[in-house]
Image 1: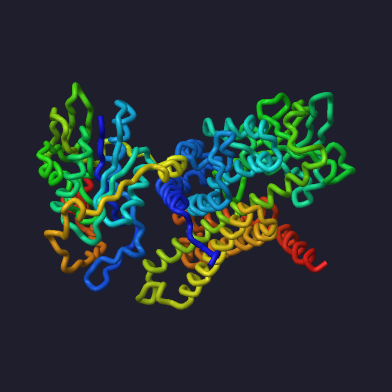
Image 2 (image 1 turned 180 degrees about the vertical axis):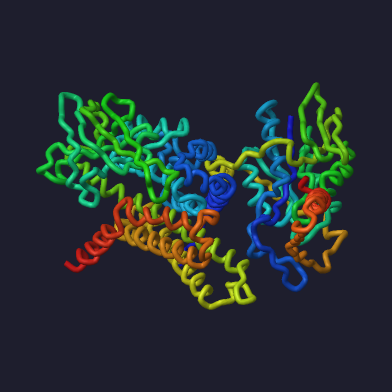
Length: 252
Length: 384
């Protein structure tokens, strides 16, 4: 069997991001494998370890995406295919290019992160499935292969459901699906010898972007401090505190 | 055009891996391990799992055969998170190095091979209760008895020691011969007559275990001897010429942490109606920390690069790096405490621990005074 993880390279949440002239400037930012995609990479490596076959990572992005791809290879994926394109490309256009590569690779199972950390978009997995005409299961928290089909648990707004799905199919990953491993130092050294095939998006007949980013802004977060006076009516203050913790802070 | 300061792609990935591990696994438990003087063995296991433990073991013995540049990259990241914890893998490399330098291929396979097969450590036993800087004055005795050596004596301030598989022990066949009588011999910890006393009450680096070792007529086969009967002292010195570079790397990590914490606090803390980062008194502190950090980091990498190339200039360079980096790091920790004021003095914030930890970097693997003697001898030898 063949398992594919579609991955992306995104800014590290811990690093600072600048906006220059209305556009995000990533030149001084540490770029990493999208943490949501780590669940996808971990899952295809586990599938390979349990059932044999091949674990392949596929990506659409600028040349530098190769770094994130090497991380996935250092975790244990076998090889990579990188569709290169500069600048912002919307997920529907990306999916069209990814679908062409996937149709040729003909995997049984495709995983990708449930949400892309940089655009907060959840479209890539579903759009790729649609372009291929394959079923999609989003927000997967459990997955197993069973008689040539897949059995998966996925989250709903108010609960979860277990589904059986014919393969090939696309699954989007999230926290809870597994515990992604760290790459290893021997893995890093082996990864440099693993194949990354690069294809220019234009060669796949995919060019430009249907959506153009005109201007970007960074949200300024202000620390919210609310002080409840507990000196006069402590019981009412406590009730108010519990209400705020529940409804606004959403920690209870 | 040969000058090139860039890391290879693999080194960058190694740095990213070590940084992430340090941030996610080591830093969050550093305070607790310090408070309880607890050896975080589970972190040693994780370090082994991701391949960052005992990285210098040669490929022929089953390891990765990496060099000091890689060790320095890891050392800065782990030192940033917890210098005390970093001393554990660092001291293991210290125990491995004499075997790399003087061990036969058979000895390397026998002693170092197992270190790649499970989470395990090596250790280096030179200092004694009555000698440190004057290493040639050691009193642990080795007596040849047929195809064995019988070792007896006490070693002091030994990092890892009991937690390791073996100690590379320096002992003398004849104390009157001073350095010419010293042998280096691998003594496995499970031999009869080996016992340990843990040293308590350390000021810092409390996650790192430190022991006194007592060898009571321990019989060790002659096949465990490294080099010949005259080479022990030389092996010790050649080892320290290399292994004080990771001490510098850990110090660079401490300095970076001090700057990170001080700068973050300076932006958040207000006085006289504005963040204290607005004041020149604080800005100068931050700038001085940065000057020390950047120069120590690049020089430490330079010393590692020289050592990896086998250039004898690394002997002096490693002494410069060790003394300099540990001093700028101590100063950075001191200034970070000053920047945080009262908060810097209590362990709710991580900066007081930086100072307690990095004090040891000025002492172990050759005090900074000894480093200066090494540097001065190198200057004067060139003129003679």
